[in-house]
Image (cartoon, rainbow, N blue to C red; front, side, top):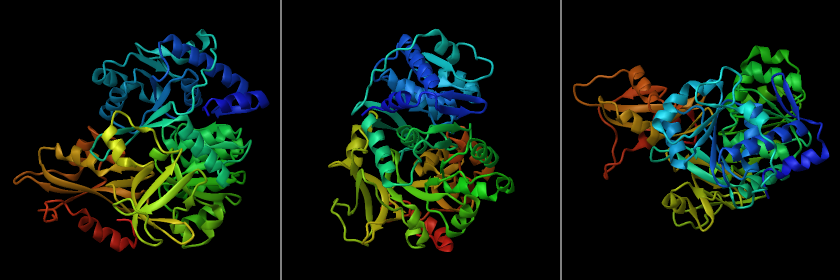
Length: 515
């Protein structure tokens, strides 16, 4: 299997169907296929070879769509850059993965000098925006217009399709290597499970396209012959306008986005009855939010997806009918057709139903490994089973309930934040003697990043000062939203900070299980 296969099939069967809609730009499958083949020719002329990594730092756009096809067309691997990262984090990921060709749009053009200063080996920057072209960059549109289309290499199977960076438990991002088979198997299984995408429908890309959740929807939609409507970033008004204008059938959102949509009075002024499915992830949906969302989207069927980048990314789905059961609605659903899911003890022995252990996943969707991190790969994937780091149990019918996080991770607004990243940034402030970062309940974001800090004797620091310090080193969404100053942190006999004790007052008061 290979990612570009869907483009060939759709070109053969419906060349005049709109493939991408971005603002006033509408391109058919035939037009897009020609541009993709030309962009592939341009990349080849720039020296991109099979297996090379090509990065993209940009907001959602039709050019982002073309990039996702053109890179595998020439046999290379995509490296979609997290747009919320700081220049330090971005440069680290480019350097570690040896990504020497980077596409950058208007929004991130000002970052180019800093990236080049920190990663001098960044040989080629392609400007894919609509504004003034920055110095020392190549024009995306000139490259497309100036190169003849080349044939598809039809690279696929177990070959590298992309390197997708996640937060790191040690404070450094890790590149997850996914093959063509990984991505296509996950998409096929998700489509086979039921209400994921509508055949020949219209999918809206409102979630960031650098994120693997949206990439999974991209692959599934291509397999289903969908049209792709694209907005640069999520805003309630922008999403409602796009749904109404383009008769969108399928949405991928996180509960925070759904909340913002239903809270916006202007949403109700739009015709939203074209929406047939809403897939969400990152956390369960509350009964109150589900009831409100069903009123706003009267025809939509809701599906929760659970997984992680390392499983490309879907492991379980909670189907629409399951949402009518308040008990099942707290679950993450059941294993998808393409994967096995188990709950195991520390010795990797499967536990009886109802007992809490680690969620593990096996299937052809499990990653190739972490880029240049064989020890981390060996620790995460054992006997073919991906160890998710999530604690949970499985009921008698196979529904998985997530109750704890074995990995020290916070999910805020649908984004994963590893505490170690934030703690590393905080610890570099001269006034901080000791710190611990935890996730605490937040009505808007699901969880917020909360720091508990011990200062050096005689030192002072304000909450805002520590937050701004962190933002110079890590992405803004990872910086603590709240800071608590304490004289000491609770410690175990072995000298380990007892984060469960720090979380307990917040989560006990919230009544939630995840702590």
